Amino acid sequence: MKGILGDSRLPALIALGLLAACSGSQDPGTDPGTDPSRLIQNIPVTRKACTPFGNPPRPVQAENALFHPTCLLTGKRLADYTDAEGTPRQACLFEPAAAAPDHKLPLVVFIHPSIAGPDIAGTATEIRLKQDSADLTGDPNRPGFILLEPAGRVTERYYPVPDQGYSPGWDNWYRQLASGPRTVNGQSYPENVDAATIDHFIAEEVATGKVDEKRIYVMGWSNGSAMGLLYALNRPNIAAAAVYSAPDPLAAFNDPCEQTPVAGPPKDDTELQLLNPGLPIFHIHNSCDIAGLCPNGLRLQSRLTAAGVPFKGLILDNRKQPTDACEAICGTDPNATPAGLADPTGYLTNLPGYTLGTLNHLTWPYSYTDSMFEFLREHPRPQ
Image (cartoon, helix red, strand yellow):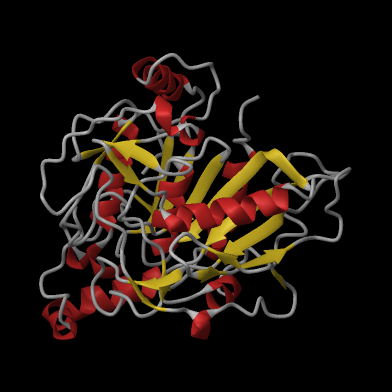
């Protein structure tokens, strides 16, 4: 399957122009996510259980002390940050010795998958191993990048068994991603605390002066990819995103408050306005993916493309070679809603497909890590 990014950002620029025109008078380049008063303040809610921003915040099931990252031997655990819900948050920082205010490096924010926290997920990819040598700038005198790995919380999730909670993850179901509270329909909606946590740790590293602020990138895996996409699509300081095996953060599995991404003001709660619709995205996923996820990945691409998002997609077969289509045995539902997977015995209805999809999903696409870095390098934030 060929990507549809192309050489022009015209669709994205048109989308950004529409966003500015529909949100009131606004200087070019203004980040609407930093000024909620510039955004639409009335969004009809058509579904009783939903908010203008999808689902209510997912409830915390436990304080995540057992899942706090150690950052292993090569990383530095940053000082804890307490989010607006009172949960202590952690992050690991891996900073090359060459990083300095007079030798700024790109910043890659890696969002871990659910169930596996930074310690496990970070060692299951090549990202840490390549952080001193990867070319994310095109400048041979500036190889490498700073790596930031924030940690999620233990919350309920709208995913199949065994990924419904009781392990670290991210809330991509409550989608108020403006920076700070936002008043809609006369009610104040706080910012998604996971997004605010990522903001905090990025700002902490940027404040050191070591970050090339034109090259702040997001990478992720699985639920971390979903959260990474939702975050980056609403943060104009993020230059680009390259993710692996992402469920659609706005519509997947049994999400009761699905939303359609749009660049302009939403008509009602069934749509979500993206605050950074010009974000270039590279999404790699499997033709046979966990819980029938492949068709959902294709629909994610079509929905974001329709919203003006520059999107490159790549499907890998069971040998991690490029292919053009999903495998029907592994799921055909665009919403990735496999029958019976709320119950572990439901996997028995198609054990070969679910087993193969799970194995593929849990294997990082090592042969394409450099392709992800190349994509990020080619998409710095415009001046």
